[in-house]
Image (cartoon, rainbow, N blue to C red; front, side, top):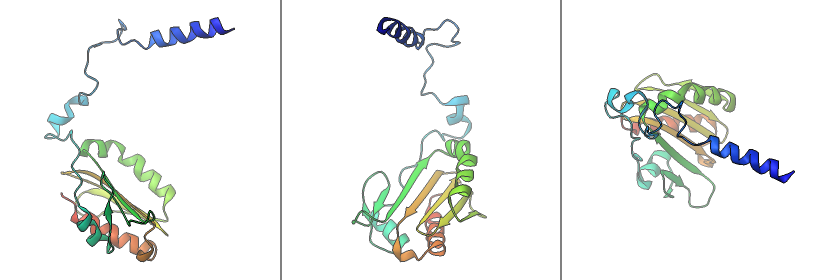
Length: 168
């Protein structure tokens, strides 16, 4: 019983070899941009760097925050967090519709941005998310457990302040 299972496993692993004669370009660089995205989009292949430091994030949120690395800012007590994830504009465009549908299912209120790029702001009682796709890149902002914000309206106002401060 063990020998047939090992034979099947060996065949499966052997089938993962990239030297398949039907592969049109077995030596292709898997990290290369698809359809020349970096050329067609004016060098858009790289995500932007984190747009804020802890002092700037603190000012935008209205309470002291500590830089916890990778554009994650926390309250220093392990409760409240502001995270900004960056991606290229092309990557943002590719995932936007999915993110927007997820926001509709997760948050109480989702509002499309009406200026300065494509995106939305989504909020509920102790959490909020915003996405901005701009020339500078894509920014996904997530906030959670900020007691001082006082619910969905406070989260929306704060997320809009963060969006306004992002590079365009």
